[in-house]
Length: 379
Image 1: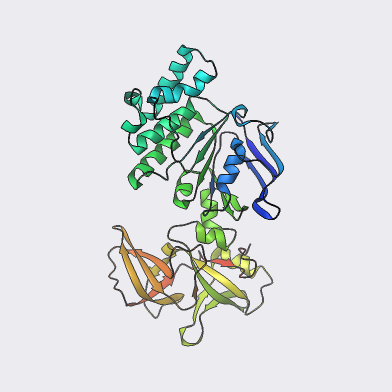
Image 2: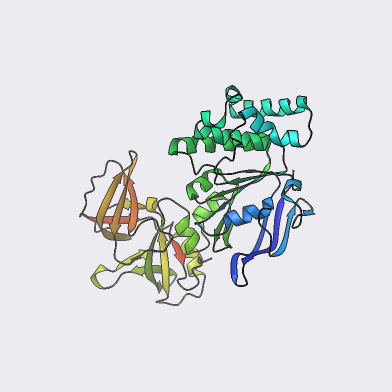
């Protein structure tokens, strides 16, 4: 097995178009690392550089101790799973899985051993004599995974492997990939634009935007302590809600004033966020962006402290809860947000109607505070 290391890697098209900018990233041996970000952020380009399908403009790429910038793809000891399966249509499942092993000149006995073992692992043994056209999308993707497994590579590369599957098959195949990694424990780099997929799968996640890593960490670290507004808006579904505010200091107490005039509301910072902001030389009246997760709202009454008031636009019933989309004075909408307004997750039994004025309490121990100029989190 092996780790993968990007050392000050750049990828340019032309003189001034950076797709990847100064990428420094180590993917640990046996780790399942997810590269996630919006379309065009450079995640697939990074994966293709590991595979040798894209040349590196500057910097160095290592697989294990070996610098592979100039090593041919076939000599890198990697296996790649594509989103479109890339199976040979004229071959049956067995021959698709065995093809690369035959090219290596491996014995028939060893080929059969590896194919049968992978077919058992992926529950596709009964399909070995079928052609790809006779299989469902989920079955084809399992064959593509099996073809990668039999090679016993140092590194697995997976490029949006679930994007062509329906919702139910995505969940099922995602679980199979998780089980597969627990079994074979091969270093895996997984690319997706779906942050939900990233959160449920990765040991660690690297969030990319415009070719630059915005944050690297465990799923929980990214969710609990996003490094900047981009990560905060991208990680989490529904997206974090954001509000323009000003800090108000009164001794050791720091509050955030949201909105103006009669619509103004004040939220008192508590817990770790309060300690962080209070410990900095934050000027009274300083502008900030306040972030609130939808699940950190709760229904309350007008007279309670730390409340925001909004008008309901849409209600989505999810069975165990409801998503309420509403307009709240002082709200802002970053480009990463999923909706054009604020979102609150409330209990399924609460009666909420479109057009209703809703008073929402806020769990002020879980507020997130960002600098609107740098977009960075207060740390």
